Image (cartoon, rainbow, N blue to C red; front, side, top):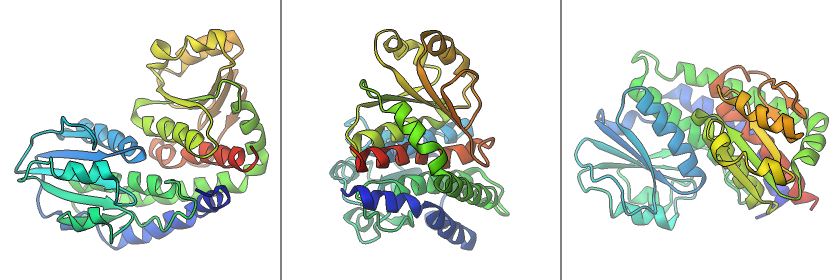
Length: 322
């Protein structure tokens, strides 16, 4: 992995998103599916699994039978005919995901969602949907994570959207995310030094997000671990008061909060009374140490596709200046 190349990968995010919009505008990437699945199984590892979990929850909220499973699990659903299995791997070589293919029910339809069309995963699936994220020279899945979310939102639109133009709302959202990401990159000097200083504590960092965007917290914590090798933990906003609050009492607790949960007030109840460092992204939380807003952050799906870049840029800065 290369920190300078990782930063360059991040700086290319807006252009890559706009290129993806062109692809989505030219046709439905899931059009080759050819059937309406009665069940959906999303499998992957790491950031692929993070994106899959949010996507599966969204499909269930729309009335579909959908689950996300770690590809390494030996408890994959034994669902056959009528089941769509989406195997997700940016590089297409994840050994756990490849192994899972032999454990999927033989009557299920298996589709690869990958950034590498020539990969082994692609060769073993009946349909390939490409992430279109380009080569990530830094060796870290950053654009591919963002594009995974977009393509899974496209799957949601394909299965549940307006039959006349199901991708139109998504195209608008991705364009807004490109603009928002570009804004955060362009204004980096005004916020990144302070945010990095606040989050770089001796006990590591914690990241919290609403359940519907839990992947943002998980991916952000992964970025801090993977690049600069900082301790980082992800938590869901409502669950925070049950599993993470305890550390605010006896550690130098630093919290990156992706705002928008109905349970944000519960977090502030404990953090503010204990003078905890809290950085709020995408929403105004009274009394926090720093608030970072960006265009479009009132739109939840724009937040989903954008907010991780904040932690990615913090990770890049820490990685480049250890």
